[in-house]
Each structure stands twice: as structure tokens, then as C-alpha cells.
Length: 522
Image (cartoon, rainbow, N blue to C red; front, side):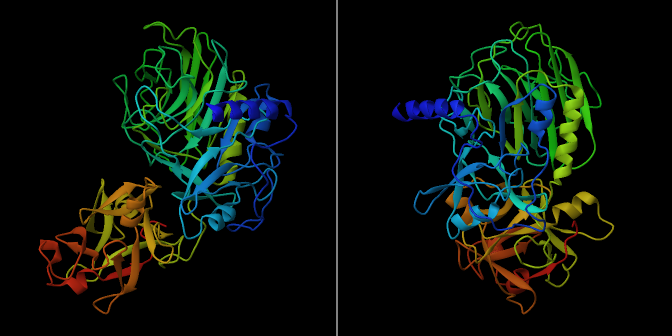
């Protein structure tokens, strides 16, 4: 309770001192990250929205400033080695995150994100969410699980892997009752699931389900709450409490809305609080927005028209802390008032100009962090087979220039510094950002990074000269006698002899030796 009173007092003082931009401490470091210069944006999404008469009342991002003049902290990280925290700021006012400061602070240990700072003068900061009606205490997101580029700089997004969430139940300026608001977030169409609820937006102030119309939040995932849904998703939906709505009748009324599987997705929701809401999405790397629904709020069942908003902000979970979802978050804002279509289109143009993308370019086909590679078997008779994920399992498959784009993407991996040891490596899925090659019960799987020490160890492999005299072999970090091996076209960590069939000494040296090659998908 003492901490809660202190935080409320701090927020009140900060709102009074609204001229002070930024919620955290000083900007840490000034080193350049990535290929571009540390230039500032001249206009941010919140500048666009303010000019249109719908100012931001919350603005959260781990990648960049959302105001052209913002020069405060974006987020706070806490390291495992000693529990110390630090704030991560910008390379320049209005610019991009100083990821080098995070890398330096978290060197030789691991970090989690403990605070996501609001860039508006209202200081609606998000902290790790506590227990709710449908879920217990949430965990913070690993700070290093989702490296991407923005503006030519390496930055970090937030990769939610279930039982992770952030919240602020005591906000300033966020819509209440039947007030109008708008919101957007940049997320990913490749790191999703069908569990409730990957949300960003307006929620209850007590972490409980308080009834229809007590939420107004963007939802993005493959959960089809009201059948039928067209396609396989993921869809941009409105979590209005007790339902993920694609229209006023719940289910999809737009057969073209089959989902958006872009690597980076702009998702938008606006709601006048009385009788109207609209949903839009677009590719956050290029192009415009598609309106998925624009029309009346639900009237049956009752409670949604008008709304009964409470004004809390939630990220990564449902309003009652339903926390089974996975997802990615790069930036998002909430507004006072209903944004115009023209303003939303301008915001989309601003987002696409950021140039969200993969990690900073590194020579492909090497084991240098940031390189994209494919790993080819060297065993005689299997030299056309590559390590690839197939659903969540990891196998070897024939891949060639004539293979499908899906097969080529599944067989491409991004080399990361070892999640448990920076002297080793980890392999992130090329087309499922935030998912890594990880062993469990000696078999390999593609799984989302959950930040735990066990996951980090299971997903870390130490390169050595190939045991057969060819290529490279990859020793398991936490099982030092076991190496990545293909056996019956399935991937294991295997020892040279043992009780398991996949530990057979026959062809072991060849089966654990891999050719590191240029990626099938760049």
C-alpha cells in the first residue's frame, strides 16, 4: 500500500510539472546503434494526432519517440545479477531507443522490462500487472527477446510469451464512461496464438471483469470469439469485455478480413463511446490501412451502447488478467476524442517511414550475431536437408531453389548472442520473431522465449569444429555431452552412445556436423 501511495503522489506531481517531458531519468549513453545516424524525427504520431484535435493521453514504445520533441526515457530494465534497474532513453530527441545502453547494462546477465514509460505529460506509465480475476501475478517481458531495427538502428520490441502483462489502474486523461477515444499499436502477425487476450487499451481499474462495455481495447490474435471468422487470422478485434468483436454482431461481416500475417502490423481501434466503433489494420512496413469494420456498437447483448469505460490501461492481457496470450509490441498510443480517418492515415505513413525490419544487416551465412543462416546436414545421403521448423516441431527437410517461400522461411534462422552465455549462440526463427530453437526432453522445438533461466539455457548452443571434420557442431549449453543431431529427420540433442535411439554411435559424428550456409530466406 505504501508503494501505491508513493506512486500516486509522484504521478500527481509529474502532471503538475507537465512541462517536464519524460517519465524516467536521464538518457543513458549516446553511442550509435545500427547503420543510421542518431537523427531525430521531425514529427511523431502524437504530433499528428494533436494537430487533428485528438491528442495522445498515453504513448508507449520501446523503439522510438512518439513525439518529435520527446527526449525522456522509454522503458526501465532490471538485471538478474544484482536486481539493479536503469532507464533506457533515446539516441536523440524525437529519435530511436539507445539499445546500446541496455546491452551494456545487461552484459553477462539477463534483464527484464519492469516499466514502460508514457511519453505524454500525463505519465500513464505501465508496470508489471498483478493478479486478476482470471490470472495470477504476471511476469515482466525479457528485455532482449525481440531485437529488430527501426530507422536503421537496432532496438528491442516486447515479446510476450504468456503470463506476461503490464497495467496502470490509476491513469490521467484516459476515456471514462461513454467518452470517445482512439488507439493504435504496432504488433506482429507472426507471433500470435488463440488464447485470451493480447490487448492494448482501456480496461477495468480492479483487474476484474466488471461487465459488458467496461473495456475498449485493441486485440490481436487468432482467437475467434464469435463464429464465423473468415480466414485463419490473426485479426484486429475490439475487446469490449465479454467478447472480441469484429462487428456490432460480434462475428465477421467482412469476408475480406481473413487476418493480417505481416511481420509488422498496424492495428487501430476507435470508439465514440455511444454508438460507433471502427477497426483498421495495415502492414506497418508499407502501404495504407484497410477498414475492417466501421459502424454501430453492439446493442445485443446490452451494455455496449453506451460504453462504461473505467480508464485503466492494459498491455498483453485481458481486462481481468486473462494472460494466456502471446504477442509482440513495438509502439502504441491512446487518444482523447475520436481520431479522423485522415489523421489515422497520416499516422500509418509515419509508421511505415520508420522502416521496421529485421536485425541490422550482418554478413549472411556466418555465426556472427545478427546474421541469417540456414543449417545443412553433412551426413552422406542427407546433404539436401536443412534444419527447419514445422509447426512447433523441428525437423530436417529437403529445401531447394524450387521450394515454397514457406519452406525457405522455416529453414532460415537469425543468429543471436547465446541467451544463457554470450560466448555461445541462440537461433531465432526467421519468420516467427521471438521464437527460438529450444530443446525439451532432448528433442528440439520452436518456442516463444519466456525469459526463464531454463529456457535461456535450453536455447543456447556453443559452436565447435565439426565432429566429422566438416562444418560446425553445436554443443548444448546445459548438457555438455550432447550436440544438435538429426535422427530419422527429427532434431535432438544427442550424446555419442546412450540408452536413447537418437544417441546411437552410428553416424553420430556426421549427424552432429552442420554446414553453416547462406539463408534460404534473406
